[in-house]
Length: 141
Image (cartoon, rainbow, N blue to C red; front, top):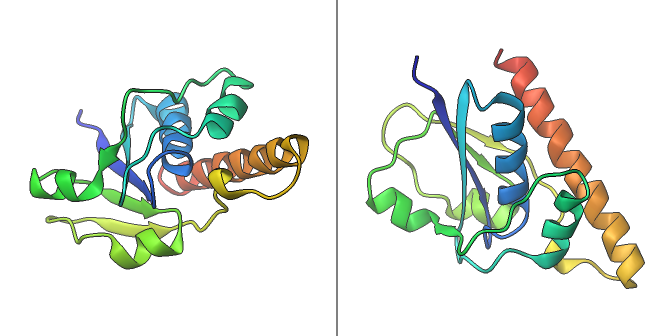
């Protein structure tokens, strides 16, 4: 049985997308194959990595994927899920039958406040992404 491929896309591919990718692969890796990418890839955000570490999921990797490279390479996805307005506007139209979804959520890399306030806000973003993934799975089971 082949798995449906899901691409999570955010501006830099360094926080929200990897969080969603980790959750989907953890919760339903037997049914879905998740990837994440960015419009302008950057190194994984340390705050996002830290709040994912708290729940036992490691999102660190050497580099993030560039969505336009994936497009040029001919990757096919059953679902492309954008996590910010910029990615929703600039996401390329992948070939094939692709369902596009939009789950706008704040950026852990751009949080105001003290380090403690930033970490609390990043946890909220993490938990929202987890709920979104759970909702997706409930709809697609």
